Length: 190
Image (cartoon, rainbow, N blue to C red; front, side, top):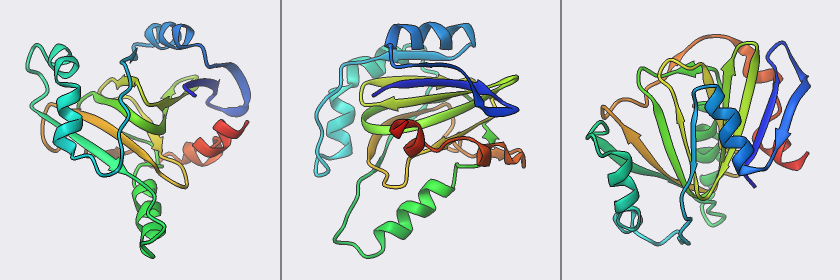
């Protein structure tokens, strides 16, 4: 379920808005300068090659990148593998990488083909949490302080758009704000 959860940055318990209505989500995010869109979701399985998935979205990708701004487009994917004893540790390490507040020098554009993840946008005086699922496109403007949670059992496929191949490198702020907010798992369970 796509979810928008807005709370005061100084008090995570002060919830100002919580909605699953995609039109309301898009409108609320637009007023804050965040692009949110819905594309038709395709069914994908863990064995489908990345090139095939990107091919299914070729027209949409072409429309989004009509100006040629994004020079590197790839796929990020994580799926639970209960047969791999190292998977829980690898998944935890991947999750920890972006759980702290950071920003990027370019827009962070993601389309969720399947699964889910949550972007937490620190837009003073609020934290805007956007739980994205299959079919959701979000664009976080360059310089926006944010963090990302893929959950304790990451399972997603996302198309990533970069202006530069190293555009994903985060500039971490050192602000511990993320520690006080509900995790993706907690937001979805509420």
